[in-house]
Amino acid sequence: MIARLDHIICEVPDIRRAFQRLHAELGFPIAWPIGPFWPDALTAGLAFGGFNLELVESSIEKPAVPVVSTLVFEPTSILDVKAGLAKLGLAHRTVLKMEDDPELLCLRGFDSTQAETPQEICTNVIPHGVESFFFCRYSPFLTERLAPSCFEGPYGEAVAFGIESPSDDLLRVLLKAPAVAWSEGPEARVKWIQFEKGGRFDMATLSF
Image 1 (tube, rainbow, N blue to C red):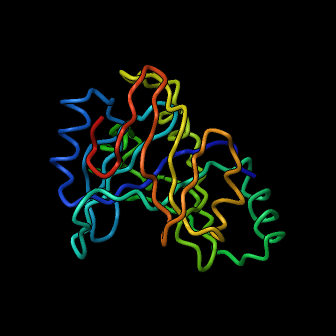
Image 2 (cartoon, rainbow, N blue to C red):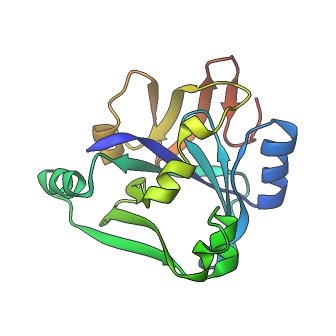
Image 3 (tube, helix red, strand yellow):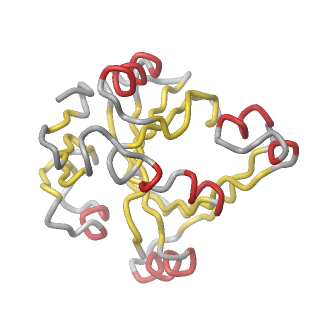
C-alpha cells in the first residue's frame, strides 16, 4: 500500500530561519514557499532528494529545536491503503483537502486562471490513534508538480534514515527497509538522513 515516502513533517521554532538555512545556505530547492497552508500554522516545502521536507511553524506550540515526528506516504491507491489498514485492525478517516484562496493556490503553483476556482489539493487517509504516519494522495496537478524528478538537490538522493521510535510503533511494521536504522525512543522521530553524495544531515540542528 506504500508507493514511496512522499514527505516528512518537521516542526520548527522559526520557519523563516529554517527556510533560509535549508534553501539559501545549503541549496535545497523550494518545493513550495512559506504560506499559511495549515490552520494556525505556516508551512513551506523543500525538495530533499527523493521526497519533500515540510517545515511547520505552529502559532500555538513550538518545539525548542526542529523535530520530525510524522512520515507521510504516497499510497499505491486509496483503496489499497484502506484495505491495508483494515488488515492491521486500524480504523481511519479520509479527508479531502480543497483550497479556494486564490493567493494560496498561486503559492502552490496553480496559474491565475486555475486559482479563480477551488482546487483539490490532496486526499489524506489518517489512521485513528496513530501520530507517526499517514497517507497522502495529491491531486494530479500537484503530483506532477511535486514529483522528485522535478527537483535536483545539491546532495543527491537520500539513501538512509535514522529513526527513533517505540518498539511497538506501527511505523516499524510499515517501513521494513534496510536503509532505515532503528533505535528505541518514546516517540517517533527522524534523527538523521544520509545523502548519496556524502554527509549525514542532523534533523535537530538542520545541519551536516
